[in-house]
Amino acid sequence: MPLHQDPGSIHILTPEDIHKFLDPLSDILEKSVRKGAAVRFVMPFTKMDARAYWWNEILPAVQSGEVTLFAAFENQIPIGTVQLIKQMPSNQPHRCEVSKLIVHPDHRRKGIAGNLMQALENHANYLKKSLITLDTKTGDNAERFYKSLGFTPAGVIPNFALDTDGKNYHGTTYMYKELSAHA
Ligand SMILES: CC(C)(COP(=O)(O)OP(=O)(O)OC[C@H]1O[C@@H](n2cnc3c(N)ncnc32)[C@H](O)[C@@H]1OP(=O)(O)O)[C@@H](O)C(=O)NCCC(=O)NCCS
Image (cartoon, rainbow, N blue to C red; front, top):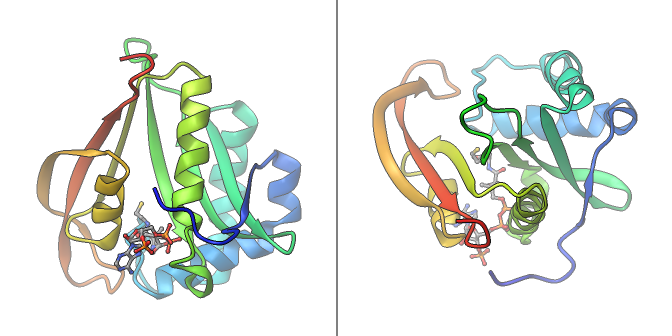
């Protein structure tokens, strides 16, 4: 994947980091949903809702080790984030899942998402995972982006979720990537 000029340094966030960076993390999520990001939420979605999401759902998941949270930083502030869900049913120890790849709208098209996904894939390799799965809004830029990273569409479920306007439904595309080192 082409790397752009210094597109943010990537770090794994600790529970303490989530506390410290709750405000910028909430800003990324709230502004992205307001711009139409299909990441589970519908409008109205406030900064308080975003804070509650990070605090009530992601902090415990990071604390328990269920999720690894990556963030891209610029000037010591997170500007993009992605989650690797590691905890799977006992018959799928080799699988992990990508969740909520979001880049702050003011920092897009600089290669941040590409770098976040590279860090996630490196970590999945480190964990000896051999299968990464995800789902994304059918036809979205993100779907083309994931294809460019080597993810294969497994199938489309039509009318899977509501758009952020809460009115129209969109399909979701399930995708997967096998990591060659362990396939
Ligand atoms: C999808 C998203 C994460 C991409 O973040 P980003 O940092 O801008 O992506 P990158 O700069 O790494 O772009 C990588 C490639 O993806 C493609 N791409 C990304 N955004 C695109 C857009 N708006 N239009 C067309 N292609 C796009 C391009 O091929 C791009 O490479 P290029 O800039 O060299 O042409 C970002 O737009 C976002 O946060 N969207 C809202 C949340 C979302 O939909 N997340 C994915 C669902 S889980």
